[in-house]
Amino acid sequence: MVSQDTIVAISTPVGRGGLGVVRLSGSQAIEIATRLIKLPQLPLETQRATLGLFAPEESGRPLDQVVVICFRAPHSYTSEDVVEISCHGAPVILRHLEECCLAHGARAAEPGEFTLRAFLNGRIDLTQAEAVRDLIESQTLYQARVAAQQLEGSVSARLKPFKQVMLELIARLEAGIDFAEDDVSVIEWKEILTQIDRIRAELQKLVEGYEYGRIVREGMTLAVVGRPNVGKSSLFNRLLNEERAIVSPIPGTTRDTVSETANLGGIPLRIVDTAGIRETLDDIEKIGVERTFSAIADSDLRLMVVDASEPWAGGESSLLAKLLPLGSLLIALNKSDLPSNEEFGLSPPHDGSASAALKGGPASVVRTSALTGEGIHELKEKILALAAPGRDVGPEGEFITNLRHQQMIKDSIAGLAKARLAAENRTPHEMLLLDLYDALRPLDLITGATYADDILGIIFSTFCVGK
Ligand code: GDP
Image 1: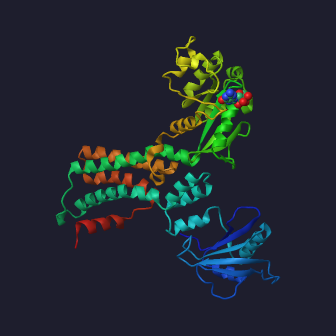
Image 2 (image 1 turned 30 degrees about the vertical axis):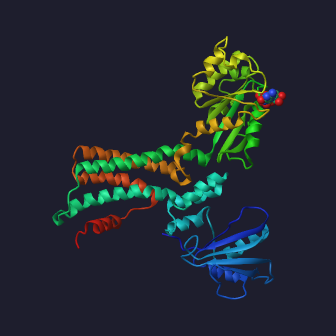
Image 3 (image 1 turned 135 degrees about the horizontal axis):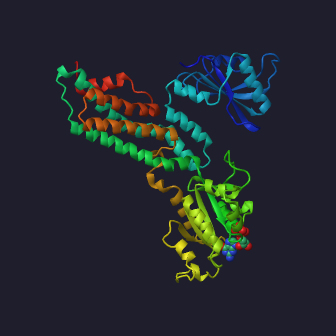
């Protein structure tokens, strides 16, 4: 049940600014606003900017000139009466206005409560509510676009067709049981299996697209590793300069490594320069699982930088041996502007370790010059390809970015697998239906509930039973 309280909050960020907005939502919103703001005429016009004076009753003296916009239920963000009061962005004024609203009967909104109300009032579904949060938190335009698509309901829209097929299947099975005497044709086992497989394949695609979706939403970390002086910091700076660095730090990042976040193809890429913690290859040998190495291991992928103008050092082989088991690894043969050491050339190397490492191994190799910029574009492409293999999953709205959604879809697939087994074993329809409902319920948790009426609706509209 939606609470009857009227809630209030300062909706603009903390701090000083040109403007600051106080938002009220609930049945008393308009009354509270009109008691605090002197307005040229009443009642407040809907969806019109009205100039007013914030003059708290006690003093009667105006504190600020404000603009009031009123949205009447249900045509508002929350579906309730909403009033937005734009003041000058002085924290003291905003706080005082908020306090006056509280004194007049409003309650301080909990975090996310305006959006929660929009959800509880049925104006947006859960995926859209989650998208509001993602949109606000986005660090790159690409992330914002993905969130905006989801705010438009793209996740639900993507799921709806499969859910519809599932509902139709359920409806036909239910009809066969409940309205047997109405001569409803019994659905063939073969068709049941075909439908289940069809839905399952589509849901599976969504689950697979998630890995990329997660990266879009959360970004990824790249650790730059290598011997001193090979050009780690220079490459780090190249990657940051070419791509606009993102200023705001990602919360929870370790402070003791030098890291910056760049925008790589719309994905926030946190680059950790291990030179910032001044390790040497020998140290890496010694420290084992010490700080440097855990930063390296914790990252999503690693970039090992090698100075291609110098001989391949013994320590590099052992570093490589440590890095390979950690997963995604890129090797930059840096200083490609200088004459290359023959080991890295096309001719077969004498010591073998460089070629063994670089040829046919699981690592991807790029020639770069942090000095001239050569190979940097290719390096970025390789980083993206390695970190986000699902990059070609399609337009912004076509993949899921949320772990909860992925889990729900997996649960649904598990229900379908049970249903398939039941169908293969020619289990009675009543039992098969239980499995199908198990597959439907998790999808409901993403798109919103299916009601018995929805299924009945399909039964009645498609089968004309009980006319
Ligand atoms: P780090 O110790 O691995 O971080 O290496 P730095 O980035 O500090 O670079 C060490 C030295 O190599 C500096 O003098 C850089 O200017 C130089 N350097 C880095 N990358 C290149 C490159 O691609 N070509 C050339 N010629 N010099 C480079």
